[in-house]
Structure formats: C-alpha cells, structure tokens
Image 1 (cartoon, one colour):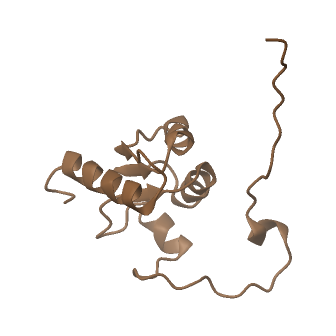
Image 2: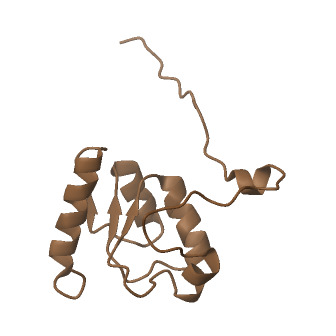
Image 3: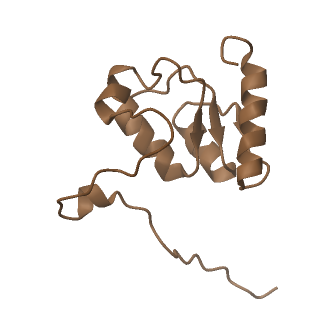
Length: 122
C-alpha cells in the first residue's frame, strides 16, 4: 500500500582467516575428535564414524563444501530454510530442517534425519 521494500544488509559473514592478517590462535576445542581440513578433504567430506552433518548457516555450507568437495553421501541437517536452500543450491538435499533455530530444534532434526537414514547411520 504505497510502501517500497528496501533490502538492508545488516552484516556479511566472512572467513576472517582469509581476510585478516594472522597469526591466529588454534581453533576452540570441541567435544568431538579433531578433524583437520586436510582430513575432511581426504575423506571426501565423509570421515569414518560421521553419521550426519549439521549446518547452522549458509556460509558454513559453503565453507564445508569448499573443504570437502562435492556433497558427500551423508544426511545433512539444516538449522532453517536459508541453510536448507544453500544445501540444495550445492546439490545436497537436506535430510531434515529444524522447525525452530534452537538446540532442541536441531536435536529433533538430527533425530529425524537419522531415523530416515536407517540403521546404517543410526
């Protein structure tokens, strides 16, 4: 009704390691096993013991696939619609998309994806 929508970009995600000078501290420790980018690439994005991959943003999809190469044959879980769209744009159909962007929503999507994937992944 007389309004013209305007797109305002509030932020853009960049890979700081590629745009800012180092030296960089080591990455934060995670509870899982360490997996270097070289290990990920060597395993074609699907290292032994990995049941699925959870993505929390479109930029993480792009970064993962830049390291891993083509979409691996693993279930992919998206935090929301824009992340699911990024997966599809790279030829990787999400096995599940969280209905809410929360830890519980991600956990439910993970469970749903692995239930759909069957016993080979569960």
